[in-house]
Image (tube, rainbow, N blue to C red):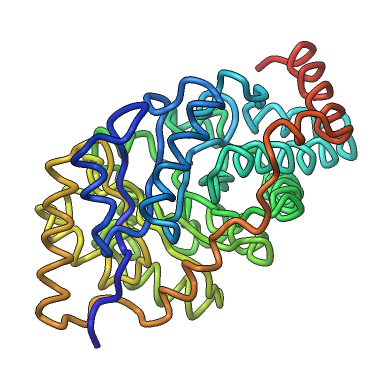
Length: 351
């Protein structure tokens, strides 16, 4: 079986497409683009950028990290979103209010991202707030599985209401390691039974709302020698077969330092695809992106069976299901109500 097209998700340099990027976008092995803060000035510019991408590749997936808190790439002209831990803290005294706010926050985030021309945001974070991981920190909803699952499910239901697919990260849980996988290789040496009973549970409890999953660049040494994103044990044995997940598996960024455990870029691409990832992210390093593209093209030429034939259909499920107009959205009573609620909530609550 030949490798399917569109398995790479790359980034862009700036506020407009460069000539090189226009050429790159025409390569059928590039199936997605992720934008970062450097690509965004304000909504009008962003709409123009996303439209220019779709003019070249109408079929491409456009993504962004719009979690809330410190991971919010779209700022100027967009609603400020709370860190998810703030919702978890609100749950302690006002659980029903927190659930409603989580749902409405998911709806508003997704509505704004869709109106800006994207297909989806990589959200939400399903890692436990253990206090150990600074890179996760207040991105997590809560330390308790019950609270986390309730709020995350409400948030994802809001995303679905808006017409956006969901992505839970970082499977099977990044919250119990100290090292930042962007800068180092985290190793979680706890017994597998403990990981199953703790970090894995939010994914189990949120399975019905998950359209996609992003694995962690973490080695769980008592379970497997490979990082989860390069591990058939985690992605096939546990996620696919044991948990019955049939959605999309996105790799985390293959340029991150922890990913180097799999070898050079060509080896990272091969190992991630063999493990079962449907789409691979290669960001913030154009040289590495071109190496990844060359590896995919070589595999295609060799008719290499590196990817699940169902990947294309699964990835199609990540496309936007609604495209609200930016100005119309902001004039809608629902948006105005939720926008004001979030402004009030952030004014009254801090971490």
